Amino acid sequence: MNRLVTMLCLGILFVDSSFAQRIITGKITNSEGEPLIGANILVKDTSIGTIADEDGMYRLDIPASATTMVVSYTGFDTREITLGTDNLVDVGLTEGLLMEEILITAFGIDRNARDISYSNQTVKSEELLSTPNKNALEALRGKVAGVRISEGSGSVGASTKIVFRGEGSLTGNNNALIVIDGIPIDNAASRSG
Image (tube, rainbow, N blue to C red; front, side, top):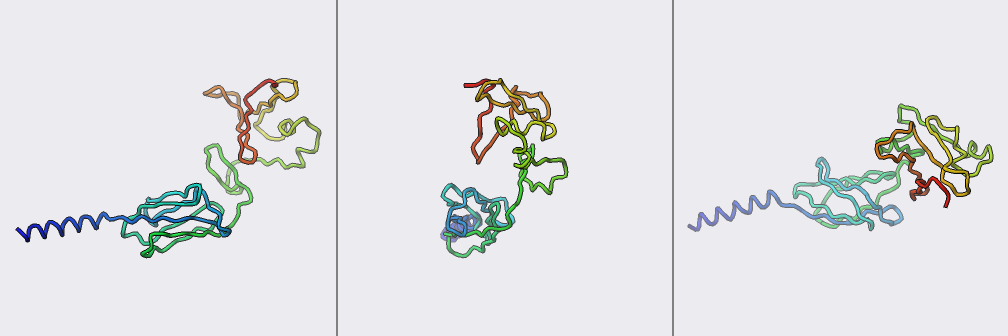
C-alpha cells in the first residue's frame, strides 16, 4: 500500500512539474525612466505574450522551460532578455531608428511611406500657404487627387465636408476622420453653430 501511495505522489509531482509556470513581472521604461505604454513582451519562439499597462508594468505567465523573452516597442530597439531565477525583470529600451514618415493605409496598417507600392500624396505647408483661404481644409481643395472638399454652408464656422474616392457609403457617413495631435475632430455638422 505504501508503494502505491508513493508512486501516486511521484506521478502527481511529475504531472504538476510538467505544467508548472512562472509569473514574471516588471516595468518597461525608456532611457529616461519613463514608462512605455503598450510595449510588447513575448516568450521567444511561442505565442505567449502580453503588453505593458499605462504605468509600463507587465505580468506574464510563462512555462517553466522558457529561457528568453523578447521586448519590443515602436521606435525602440528590440531586446532579448535571458531569464534567470529572478521573477522581477525590469527592462530599459533605447531609442532605435526613427521613421521619417508613417502612412496609415486603408486597412489600418502602419507602413513607411517609401515601402508602399501604390500612389500616395503629400501636401507641404508651402503649398497650403501659397493662396489665401478661410481655413486649412479649404486650402487642400484641388491639391489631392481623389478628394472632394466642399463647404456645408457659406456661414462662418460651418464645417467642410471631405469625401475620399466617391460618395457611396454603407452607413451613410463618409466624412473623413480628422486627427490633430492625437485628438479626433468632429466634422459631422454641415451647418454653422
